[in-house]
Length: 231
Image 1 (spheres, one colour):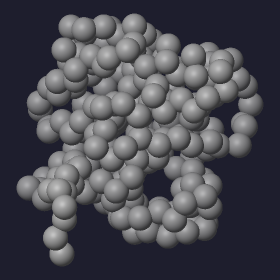
Image 2 (cartoon, rainbow, N blue to C red):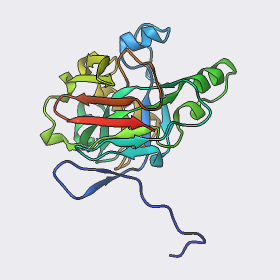
Image 3 (tube, rainbow, N blue to C red):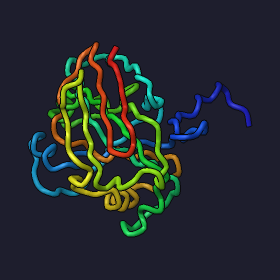
């Protein structure tokens, strides 16, 4: 097969303990999936889960022990951090039941859903799509993927983020409104999941703005840390 222009390289993420990489198919994100974060955004209760997407090449892969360099994005004066547990799908499927969902997971990683909050809020006020606030270049920094068998009890793991060494976000994955299996059940009812899909599962309370020169370091217990500097 030939192409009229050279195809773009496949977006990919490093894998713990391997020189192989995880190819990214799609990036799904769950909105307002921690109760305290939902409250700080003006919502309460266990509302039905909702999803948005980022382009696959929005990933900013950061190898273990390294510091990723994220360019401060254009058009915004209010860039927010959102630390998240990321689920990497290894086996696709549609209408996956929660009881079977964990069989579809290849591994887990630490990710950041970076958000141009001012642009997102402007679009919300106008009733327009807010992909400009979420799906921009480099908006999904992510650390190496840990295979599921090596990840420990992710469902109860601590999750945290520091900015310039000071705590911003700190919670546990157990505080998810919709847990990992339930999220996969809901998501696969709307889309047929494919190997290579990444699911950013939501962020706890404490989201706030960051500026050029800030260093963000976060983690999920058992999955290592993710370190990113804004340049």
